[in-house]
Image (tube, rainbow, N blue to C red; front, side):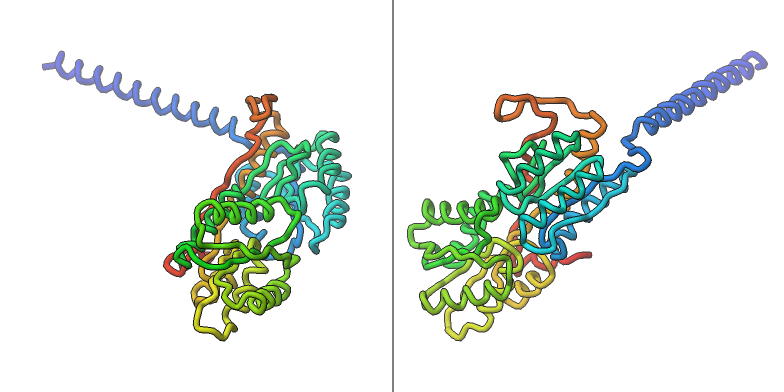
Length: 336
């Protein structure tokens, strides 16, 4: 009996020793993992740069940037041109470069005018990534944003569904800005290639102004009384075109497809003056822009071949995705 009791005690002691060792090993492993977490250094600051910096669209991009900053324990700054003005955005970027931040994420007002100053930042050793609107001729390491050509095609498919594949449609846009040019081209190509009963009769410039877009829509309706739909490639213009559709005095509805998910646009979808809008993955743009900049700043990337055949430290282009917002799912897109 005594031998049996002794054996049990030995087995229990062995089990407790094993358990203690297992717990200790896990704690050491977790501690080592925590010591390798991505954490920024004191004073490490990153800057997001936009244009029309006060508009609601940028809030989600900035929220993603802020969330990444919290995760990485770094500081951020938000700057931008207050107007739709390439010279102002260039000046802002020059001022930022002079402060030598750890990295810059920028949405370029057009694909050409920012190239020189973006290259200046990279040549000064400041990592730069582009989001939302690119400058493909620059030395920026990556572009994170919507596949705007595909988004334009999706808008065309949505419009064709609303019109049963028949009717005259127009585009209201911001010419000479890469993302808007791609949306327009994607919409036009999809209509031309897949919907022979539809015709894009005009492409107009609203200068990013809701009142201009409203006036353009009203002018188009006078020139083309049977105009059936308008695709607007930016948020402010979508609201203007929606107001024109709301005030239209005719039996046939004017279908407006907008871009982005600010509250006014969502409200107009609810009430019916806008038929649909294209929602972008804007939080993804901000979050992953900062993650990329952090990895570049700390030399954490592993270079891989780019589409050009050169070796690139980051994916050259990242599609952050879209979805189509309609009256059926609009409630899901309001800020919670």
